[in-house]
Length: 492
Image 1 (cartoon, helix red, strand yellow):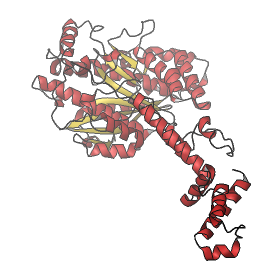
Image 2 (cartoon, helix red, strand yellow):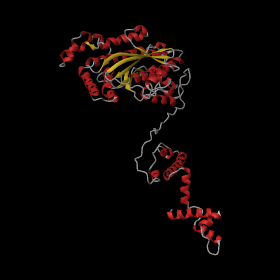
Image 3 (cartoon, one colour):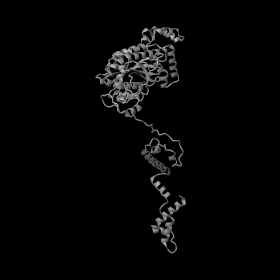
Image 4 (spheres, helix red, strand yellow):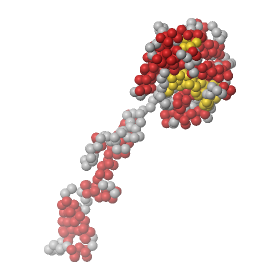
């Protein structure tokens, strides 16, 4: 609007007001010759209309509303964004960073910027409130599950929410007061009276191994004596390291194989490798050295190991909040490798009525017909003991739930199984943990040192302990599982 138009409009308002008060008008305006006052008023009306131009009305309205031009432009942008959001919602296209929320959070697009010609161009910013889209796991149709008493624990959405926002310590406290609680107790070999007898006896064996007692077969003595590495000669000078009974657990690895793992472990520590590198370069080779005899094909042993980082608990066996990540490795029994035809047949029949058609509490496919026994959780050096405890506790609580439900089908319970073993690895250090069952409570026992991958003798200790776990799996666990879960004789 031109300044002259505004001035004429204002002058017209003043003159019109004076026309309504003749006494005032007569003092300020001159009446044309002939005294034709009506002609004067008509001429003024035509020259200065009382209705202001559109732009002037807009300015007046903005002033009345307390709006500056920039404020009005922002309102226009918000109105356009709101309309856009409505259209997007109807089409299912709404998302973070668009529409009204984008304007309010300062994340509008270039189209919104075009409304404000005076604005300083800025790079778009990501809203602090934006979050990735989360997808729910779809329930499996037509899958029956064993009956488990107690309130439902399948509210997986709230469980996942808690597991991603709460600290391990808070989640552990939540498990302590769950319907089927989880409690942590210290594992002290010098106080065996505080734990179940079978667990105390097993801890005693592991204690000897952790002291280097009988971790080398007598047949390996000469190789240590003749080795060029002075450290090997020092090992050979300690008689308690060698035992003729050692070979009953399995073969003793060669010195060169152990030195190779030692070098990999030093590399991972020196250059601060992530957990996955420790798993690939150190932990998996140690497991292979202990459980897979030289020259044998992988996954061919009656008791073998498998990486199971993706494994998750089947919802029917959940017990409150669980971590997103569970365990990294486990030992399992393979009835086919055992050539136990009766067990193979019974497992196939039993799976037909189980959640996910799995003979375990996890939906991990490689374990669908192989009972798992030892669970292994790994962390970097000095990291994550609380989280590892939570993971093992939640994992074993679900496993006990599964075993209780399976035993209940045959009128039995899980009390005949003395404990479930676990290993928690923190960088070099391998530690034994276990869980026992007291009614519906799962007790986590922590922890007992086994060995370390920062020394040759420490690696031999770990290998010997793993072979001891294998013997326990094949004798104790499989006998119990065969009788109590499958309803078969305890031995083939």
